[in-house]
Length: 193
Image (cartoon, rainbow, N blue to C red):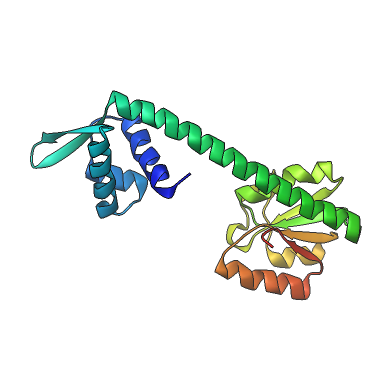
């Protein structure tokens, strides 16, 4: 799904939930730049997906049209299909990585680094690979809950009995954490390799 279509979907979703929103309402709700919202609203109006009315003082309110509602349905279907394909790909990749850990490296107990949605997808593959989740670790989310466990910090790994770490987080900052884990904590499989 194109990024532009995702933005269109976000806007028409907001307008379907509450009609008569202003441009300001939309950019605040969507955390999008005002100029970007303005550009998308103009395009949606040209396509006939939304209509606008003026409201005092010099304010435009936006409304979803029947055509906009049917396009919202189409875009929602596209988004769900796209998301499902991504989910299946993420599940297959994590399952392959975990299978390799179990088969090649005789790993049975896994710690996952990254308390994020991809970790939840990866955790679904643990049972099918006969692996046990020991802990979820994430320096940024220490103390939060993920996969029905309290999220631990890296230093907590020293007191745990695990065979490998599945690295399931991705950002520049986390590249440094990955290098630290590789150097000090043993076998690490990076889900993003």
